[in-house]
Image 1: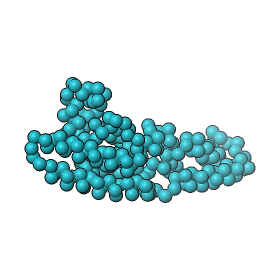
Image 2: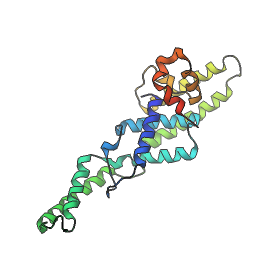
Image 3: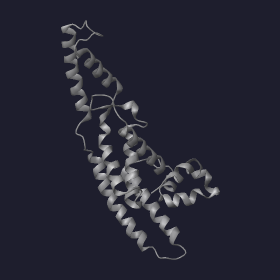
Image 4: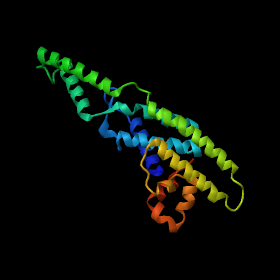
Length: 222
């Protein structure tokens, strides 16, 4: 996973969480997610590291986006939600459309409902907690602050841009290592600030690297 993939994954997740949910349950169907939970967590790690180093989004936007990742466990197996919803239908009071509910069937549905909702609550766990992500965030914040200081200290000469890119590359390798994310050889090329990515994407000689990402890179606005 490179940063541009991660950036899109994070915003896809944010959009999914923001979509209206018609269910009465506190949980959401996992099929609504465009990526696996592990991919979303990894994407957040790269997004957070990039944000700390290059102010990828505003502080208020970052706070909103980063808080949503803690709701990821609200997404559970579709089958579990379907079973609970079926129990709710059976437990619902009799009406003209379903006047033949027996007392025993409603009691059985209630017993099953209690078991399933406990399973659901156990699966969701404490909301607002992800110890590993919190530890990672603390480490990367320190690394980002170090990078910023290093970038400010680069001499203003003909080698400045090259030396700045070299420092960013070192930071990128550290981020992937701390995040425990497998890194492809070209991933480092996508971890620069968006202004640099846009500069590189204009170069037709780099289309092999940035051609598939051009529209996304230039759609970024800050």
